[in-house]
View: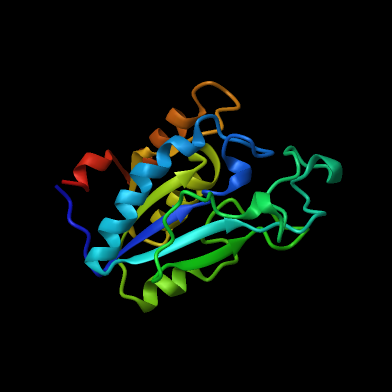
Amino acid sequence: MIDFQPTDGLIVVDIQRDFCPGGTLAVPQGDEIIDGVNRIIKKAEEAGSVIVYTRDWHPENHLSFKAYGGIWPSHCVQWTPGAEFHPNLYLSEKGIILDKGTHSEFEAYSGFQGTGLHQILKDHGVNRVFVVGLATDYCVKETAVDALRYRYETFVVADAVKGVNVNPDDSQKALQHIKDMGGKVILSQELLP
C-alpha cells in the first residue's frame, strides 16, 4: 500500500467533456475512469497532497485543429462546454487548475508545458507525483515523462487512465515508455484501501 503524503502531487490530466463520450475528441470509455479518479483525489486531499487539474484550453484557431493544418478535430475551445471538466469529476477546493495549449501557435500535451507546474510542485516541496486522467497515449504520457525529466518519482495509475489508441496498442506502448524512462505503473488498489 502506498500512502499519500503532503509532499506528493496528484496530477489529474484533462478530464474534460470533449475527451469523454459525446465530446469532439472522445477517448473511448474515457468517463469510466472518473469514479476511481475521484476516490484517488479524495485520498490525496485527506493526506494534504498537492492536487493539480490540467485542462486543454485552446483558442478557436489552435494549430492542432484540422482546420488549421493539425491532426485533431476542434476540441476544448476556451469558454465552450467541451472545455469544461466532466460534470462527474470531483474538484477539490484545494485543487489548482492549470490551462495548457492556450496559444494558437503552440501545442502542449504535457501538463508541465507553459503552465508553471514544476514551480508549483517545487514551491510545495513535492518530490513524488501520481498521474491520472486522459489520454494515456498523449497528455498523460507527456506529463509523466516531463515529471521524470524534472526528477520527480513518478507513478502512473494504470486503471485511472484511458487512451485514444489511434493504433490499437498505443496506450500500452505509452505505459512501457514511462517505465523505460524510470516511471512506475501501478494500480489504484495500491493507493486505496
